[in-house]
Image: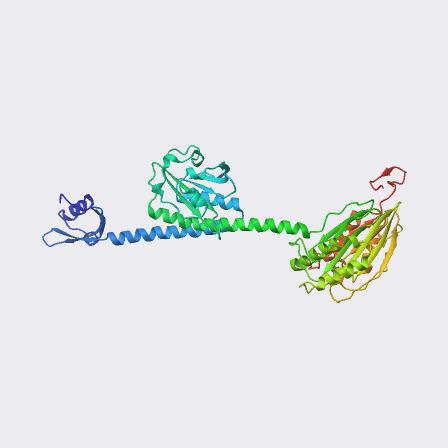
Length: 497
């Protein structure tokens, strides 16, 4: 019994003592370690009271059970990491999450480094039990073995090749203490590296094993995929925003003594662009009028917006011909027919020039609703211009008309998304031309911005939450030459020439 372990000696003494023993006691299975191996001990009490022990080496099963438990824990951790990191398309939050999960589950501290031009690199540092912190540090990649390779996506160097004593100061978290071991592994992305992950363990913690380094690489693969997706989304968002700014209608203001205002509402509230468009181009030569273009491309959404961009660019190139509306529409029609687009458009062109206190207009419609002129007394006139669609047939025809705006009078250009808006008390009535004219009659003397807001408000109220087409409106106004006055003669307002 001198060589028997204490746990077996205690059980043997208990069973070998005089007196009866319960059956469960004699039939029990004990487990314990002997010489670094795990055994099951099965006792048998013989007739003379002596006890015989059958020892079964269970080390293999024990190791298998332990390995299965670790594998289940690691699989659960990797699944959680994927869910958490892929839940956000924000690169900063992905880096924070990567550093935090690595510090809590893989090491005592973790650093996540994103690639950047030059030596100034963004670094997220997290210590176990703490919160991630983001800094930008100057990094000499050559002073950290394996870091340059990791940022380029090459396989990691073994942890034993990295001397913790040579680690630079920027790698050491504040009040972390001496570092015992370091792992540096790449964060692989979609075609290009997403960054590098640095794991630190303190001297009192066991060094990284080969198995732990391999598991860290599995985690890094998931983190790198999430960071790469976030970076790609950010880059695509930047490109989309740049393109979107070119497609969005411009902010309008006074040009050469003429007031302009515009408003646009896409067919879907979550979209910013669509098939309606407008532009105002200042005069290219002295004494000429500013050119206003407002149009409606067949269709909605991004596909229609792409064609609006082409039309707007083409019109911009045709500005030297701005005084000849029919020539501009004919050349635009040819350009659309020669492109791969199968959509057509309607459009109205307006040239506006200030002459004294009045504004002279030249109006031409290409298959578009005729502009409406709001006189000072509330009369609403429909401009006598009409024409064929643009981009539908080889030859276009259009008539041009002229008009003059006295101070305080306006010309309203609009798309059919306003007049064809369905809503009202019954839910399926069109807003209609007559209702628009009555609404504009009440806008006599209002500034251009006020008329735009009033039309948009009435159309929105008529629609409610129902589906609708793109809606655009542009107002051209002749500025007042005096202040608005109250009944007692005191001046107020800001509408002056």
